[in-house]
Image 1 (cartoon, rainbow, N blue to C red):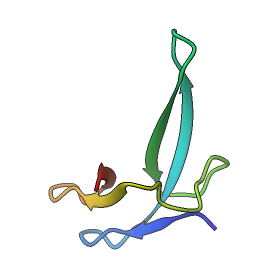
Image 2 (image 1 turned 60 degrees about the horizontal axis):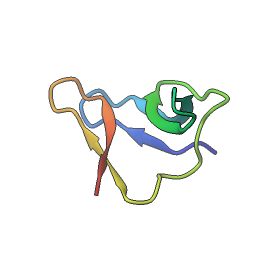
Image 3 (image 1 turned 135 degrees about the vertical axis):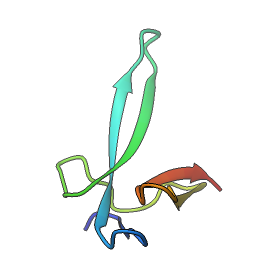
Length: 66
């Protein structure tokens, strides 16, 4: 089951996803994002050291280092 958060402003549920982006130097950058539906790259748990914060103006969730 994908990790989900319900927006306080809109009441809509958002699901956490992870995309790994390959860099020019050969390393990999992990990009976490929220989407309104569950996709193939959904994540089951919140990454360690992060917390979910909601944008006050738009109500969209995003990750922030704890």
